[in-house]
Image (cartoon, rainbow, N blue to C red; front, side, top):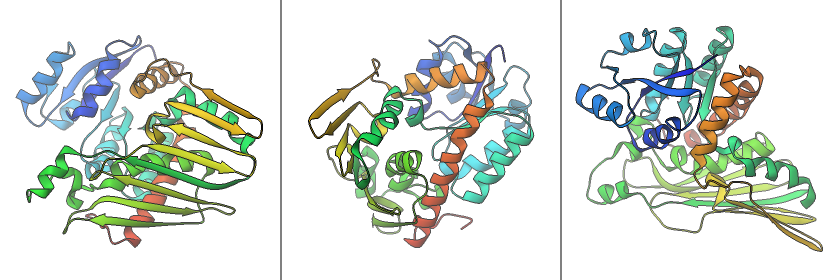
Length: 328
């Protein structure tokens, strides 16, 4: 692939976070925008020097000027839109969470591999330099016994909830909720490091008929337990700590950004940080662009194993907790 000719579906804050780095990354550029309303589409396109705007999805996916689609729409729409894009012969970058159902994730993965197309979940974690440091240093703490994580980020849209409104981010009709949005990162890092647990149980805090606004995910592995808190209705100190028989690893700012990795063992205490840019999307865009231009399908497909595991964990746990989405 000589150039990644990107088309976007969605116009939320996360789209700007990605496109801010796309415009400064060689080998990728914004070629077209899809929006249900032309005015909103043209506004987004103009900010990033793009002139092509579509309001018809089929015309957008059939356009020759794009070869890759970035999808950042409400969670419940991910599967249908990604499938249409793959069937149209486009590579797909699908914003997290990938899908609400593991069967849908399996179908998309199978379809992408059959058509030899890139498919990747836009979760920055495994693209971060400090993630690779974490994997390298993990054996130093010995057998893991406990994992403790917290990701709390008060949402302005929770204020709307308190006023009696139903924002999409908390609406089960759109597959919203804290587990799908915030605690996702804790689950993802656990899955990336340790695989699928033997059992996962989610204890949610809910507001009326809405999906969870916060909660705790307990993940039981063969020899240790992982406790993961996430909240969009509170403030807190974000962190991720792995405790072993020979020491511990403390990740500053938690599973979302992996800002700093501190490794403490008997007689040694070291801090690592190779992320000179604090913006995690910088690394996601740069590394994914490099892999796609190099046509490194193996490395990209390997991340889908983590994606599928995370989708399975979250689907099983939320259903058991009574958080149901359309189609469940």
